[in-house]
Length: 383
View 1 (cartoon, one colour):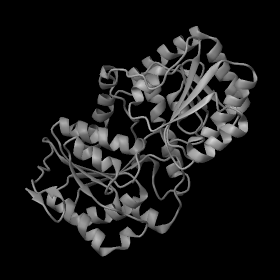
View 2: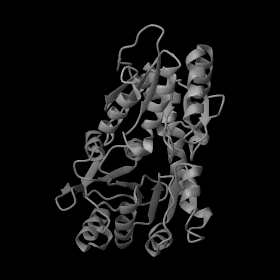
View 3: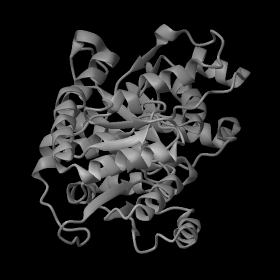
View 4: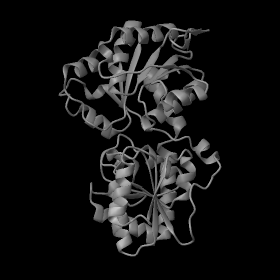
């Protein structure tokens, strides 16, 4: 039966060491990104392994919609910067945790972990995990120190770079030994099984460069437009396809005109079938100056594509420079364009790097392996 106050079934969890647990994936980010993809995919696989799964997400968010479409129990909760001080919000979250008898809750963002962490303590949730996906420092404020020391039992980073930046400003308030690292995973069987549907047309002899991500300053698409300008000026035959939507779309279209690359670059908007998009390109470009974990790098590698990216944050953990792609000094557009041109002009090198990239994903980023790691991280050998 579904509890009308919480929107979630009242069926109790087991909470016993050798049996399936009840796990809450708690992510109220309103848009869709790598963190939301991780929460949904991991929740589905936990469900498929016999755990009871509950998803808490923002109302009308893509995560909530997709969780329900996947048949997961889900509740809509809207959080803001002051939600941890709102008794009604804390009481609602506490009721969700208690009604479902949550054994472990995995939080996504700062609002989630502050409000949800307090509610989880009040509800007696034994395991309270913050999965940090942003490779950005955390301010050394008393509320952050309290949260890490008291509200959480586990802290999990999605890369070594994320772990380093998380610890950077906390001055010992968070011991390094309390932060685990588990990379994102790719379900290669599902990825390979999906039929390829053309996302765009291509002409013979034309090398297709690709990028996929939100059109935001973080993702650095402007750098890629500058790369396109330099390649075009050298007479290189290529097209750059950018998949995604965001607040910078109009700005980027203006920059395309300013740089004279309107006939070389296409903004495709939101592309739902990312595997087909990646299979259709020849080289993937990533212009981000910071990433927690470049999930799209792993996806491009799964499609057998080499990647050119800046040598920042977690990118060196995903790209083996000179073997699966190229790493370029941060914001160095000239060198970036040179590396891309090398791959455009050398089809054998593209294919060799693509094969090596696929092998690296198979060895390091399989979804099943990452779910195994998460279960061991939470419950040790009990599973």
